[in-house]
Image 1 (spheres, helix red, strand yellow):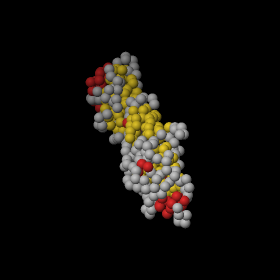
Image 2 (cartoon, helix red, strand yellow):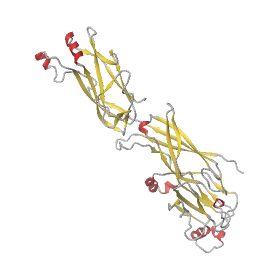
Image 3 (cartoon, rainbow, N blue to C red):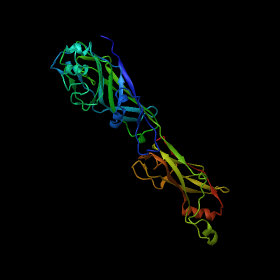
Image 4 (cartoon, rainbow, N blue to C red):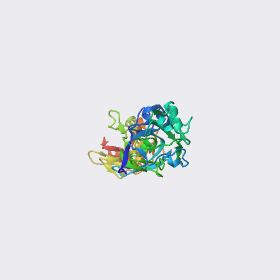
Length: 399
């Protein structure tokens, strides 16, 4: 017996947010296509399947008898048509997600030891009709699969070979019965179609996730071609590589880094009538593009408890500044609630997780800065002309 080896193939997919399709939040399969889908790309796109052709051959270990009663002694195919799961793990953080895959088609090219005309003992008929007769006569062409497999229309033949591809609707055997003795029989390769379910990329961290799913090949195994046809490789491993390339971009209008806190109606009421303002504030617009989770926090030049402060240059007298954020539709907190004037604090509490429901592309949000009334009175009573301080607002995708 020849030495048997394990065979592996990479299944790769990438998520990059697309501003033209903000609601299309899914991975794009980037696995090179081979086999069936190279001939019928429209059908594959319509049914959301992909195909791979592998150099796994199957060779008979005994003749296929004419009119055999046990389907396992002839040409039969059973594949893992039900969904199976694989865990993929982030290379840096160890986060895990789940990938699902199922086989949705199977095909190959069968090879006879001599001309099909010789096998049926009739050299004078068309070879298409001869192949049909080999497997039971009219209507038994390998273009027409046995139930429960489905038709694709994929086929090609000559005197000794027949290329075919069938849809696998359920995880059950699809079998052909030979009407004539076939001394030896070969499948030249393994061609399979698969469907892929990937996790929600908006809840994943940027980077590479990897994992694998292994199938056994041979009689009674995951990929089962009956008891006569033995594979050249008894193990098939699919190695998954999911790459997440998130966007988190904040744009502040020119000059927006300077925030002047003023009363609602400006300073004229105070200057003209001495009426104290009830608060000092400024709302600063920004634009955000986000496909990833993120958190927010503050860093301060001057600290006042869990928030920042502004200080009078000459005396060092300081008052706290309340900082809040409102985020656009499509961004919510961990509980799925809208973010409206959410308080930002130095320790990040209350803003530990914001997440997109779809790719948010350059939508408008607001930072709210405010000095409360009692602190405004302290500032005015101090006689100071100016308070200042640096407040750094942090958007952090490392959640």
